[in-house]
Image 1: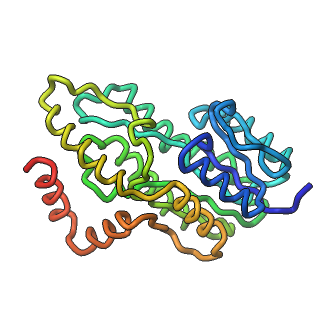
Image 2: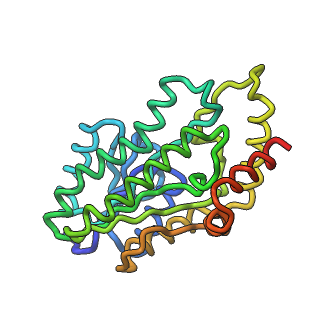
Image 3: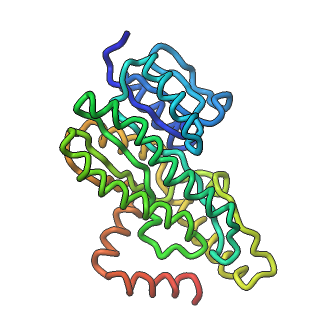
Length: 270
């Protein structure tokens, strides 16, 4: 059995999750890649990379997967909560299901996964929990309200945990990627706004997102930041990824909330 450190990554089948799996494998970590459908994973597995079926919306699925990881690798040193999706559209047209699904995956699934892993890390008297947020928490979030709100909640959870778990030697980190150059609609659930009062605004929103994504960072740059968070031995809380994320933090700090909201109104609707 290898004595390398073990990392468990949720949402590993594509995007940031897959890039993170590949990055940590190159660094010779043990990697537990979890996802809802392992058949979609096309990275070669081996002694230090194993895949597990895990749906973060199911407490039972989380419990079974974590048990299998412990059987294979003895321990879990780092948890990366990456699984998530975006529900796009105006709040008024969001269905009850889309609202529930958004928070079940992006927040409650994270909470359930953390709760399952905490006893392991407490017993080890160390561990790192890394939650993948989004620079979209810095935007007022028109047509992106559910996703932004779920990430706001995730950041609040992470900040509180960074204090609550400190006595146990467990550190909590937040990764804040800006736009990632991927198919940004691929992992989205999109409300139908055709013929609604929100149709023009939604069109402006998509144009803004498209421009941001075309100039966005790569998934591998996020994986690199996750590796830094897992290995730098610091108590640093946030790791911004991408020029847009760094710029947005500085801009919000300088301008304040009211000017930020005003600027996005003008950007989208002028």
